[in-house]
Amino acid sequence: MQGDVVVTGIGVVTPMDNGQGVGVFWEGLCNAKNAIKPIKSFKVEGYKCKVGGENFGFEKFLKDKSLADSDRCTKLFALACQQALEDSGLKIDSEVTGVAFGSILGGIDSGQRYMDEVFFQGKTKNGSLLREYSLHSIPTRIAEKYSLAGPNFCVCTACSSSADAIGLAINEIRKGRAGVMLAGGADIFSEFMFRGFSAMDALTKDGVVRPFDRNRTGLAVSEGAGVLILEEMEHARLRNAKPYCKIIGFGSVVDAQHLVRPHKEGLGLSKAIDVAMLEAGIGYEKVDYINAHGTGTVYNDLAETKAIKLSFKENSKDVKISSIKSMIGHTMGASSVIEAICCIKVMQESKIPPTINYKTPDPECDLNHILNVACEAKVNISMSLSAGFGGQNSVLIFEKVV
Image (cartoon, rainbow, N blue to C red):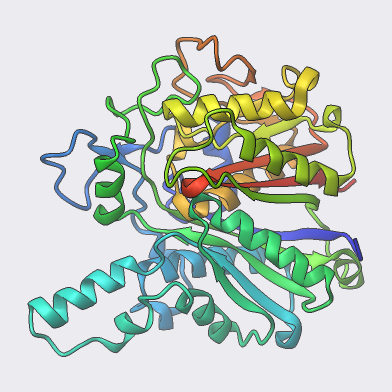
């Protein structure tokens, strides 16, 4: 490792706060607030699930009005970037600052509107919609907005996308190819995505997300964005920045065995944990908190439990665990960076948000879950787990800076 990479700024947009920033997001988590509500953006007749995590009104917090006609996903990511940069107090050196963006569908909303206007309504094509249809256009738009001439790339590895974007950004800094990276991701709530999860019968059957509960029935699709400002420790020190934490470990491994389902024994996720722990160079007993992927689906929660047991062994019952998807839903490609932000706040505030809606214990998901009410806890090392379609598994490990 050439140098420690630290987090000096965070920005987050979720259904919990409609774009109001990290403070309101964190307060909602600690108060066990449920942001999963009846869907309003499209008609739900014919669907079994009728709830989701929509974000209304976040655009009003976006200061750059030149982005007003941008794609919705671009605006989500731009707002998270705005918040993170303001939080960091960073004066941008455009030559050494880059963007790493993770998403599943990116500008799918613009693509759909473009097709509707051009092919079905016969209107003159809207060039801005075409420009922001592809995934890569979103980090490119951010680079253009802030004149960032450093590394710029997008990652699409299912629900691990923003974790992998963070991992790649760390590598750019450690290799000396960037001094600062804006790393994170975004995904929007769309009927396209909702319909896909509905067809797979993966959505909650009763409108409630209850990870690790014996009676769990599925996830809730949601939307959001998150961004971390990453810097090499010495770079942060020279500008008198106060880091939130160090990122000490990253692992990314694919199951390579099924297009959708996770490995039933959690082998891929366990291997990703072990890779990240090897990089961190710490014992498993040192991990105080795990933010679980915790979707509330039968297969995922069981596989994740097995993965934790496989890696942590005798320490698996000691580490505290919770899933914030029970409150904000599954924000798709943005989920891993949003959950990383939760890990960072846990260390900063010495408080762990709960998994809510839990009623019935599952004897096969018998780890140390923080249930229904937040708890006070000193946390020096936290871990975020992500497990996406195609068997994509990614793990980030954070250490508190004291």
